[in-house]
Image (cartoon, rainbow, N blue to C red; front, side, top):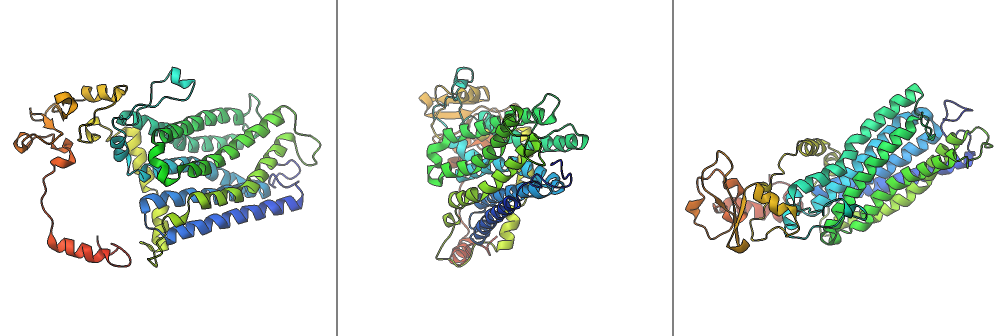
Length: 426
């Protein structure tokens, strides 16, 4: 907040041309992103991918609007800044979910990586942390929690910052011991570092599988916005603390000048990031020239993209650690966990047994289940496993084939020939 105009924004003492140019930059960036979102909704053929793409694309308009609002009005800034901060954390969660759905879901990833060698942590953490085995359901859960803890913590930090600003203890841009800006910044820095490091580990474990989905530009498009917004602001705070920012700028104290420079830089950078998102999250990946419209109308596509039910349910499941049992994440084939993987011992501790040199495996019954083992490979008679309470752990090859309904198959074949795919088939 500028001293000469308490009700104005950080740009109240900037040259008028700077305020106008930053506004134009924010508007251009927002229009590019909104057009990209509309094209995604117009070609909404893969909801499990595109709902996350649309959410990521909204990041640029939110950053642009919040930064320019901070320049022109401190009142608007107090409303939009927390929204921007919370959405930043939400974007990391969104990008993680997008990568998971590229590979078919969590269970598919854990089964896909079963038998692969664990991955070393980055130096120097590789000397104090065990190798990372993403095929272990509990390890996968810890990586997921490491990524999502930032999405849960950021709203709390935003609320604490609002309270501190109201009580005059925040002092934005000042790194003194008495400043809440310093302490919330330390917590924020630790949280976002853990989150991005966990995301990077996830990417390293699956980079070869993600190659067809062009993950590098997508990762940079998300990561660089977060890094640019935080680290350049932190760097300006250090310059202010060292006295490198002049006190001779009319209408500004050094900390207010740092905030003004930060807001202006973000506005100037957003058109670049909007174009980067246009390329990284291209609607052409989902367009089909042979079909005149998408699977859903635009209004329904946007409603699906911005619904929060999936976030709520996934958060509850992750916090509780539900549905990450070893018995629920087995491929049912002959592949054994890698020799260096902790997963091999843990699976044995949870009831898996190997036979015939690893060519066969089965789960011993849980307490209270029938006293018979549950084969995971073909070769055992059906009578050995019928009536067992552990049938839910059988491999897909053990599921009884009930046959197909000819009438349903005929209707389904007709529906697929329609221009709009299977819209009319529930």
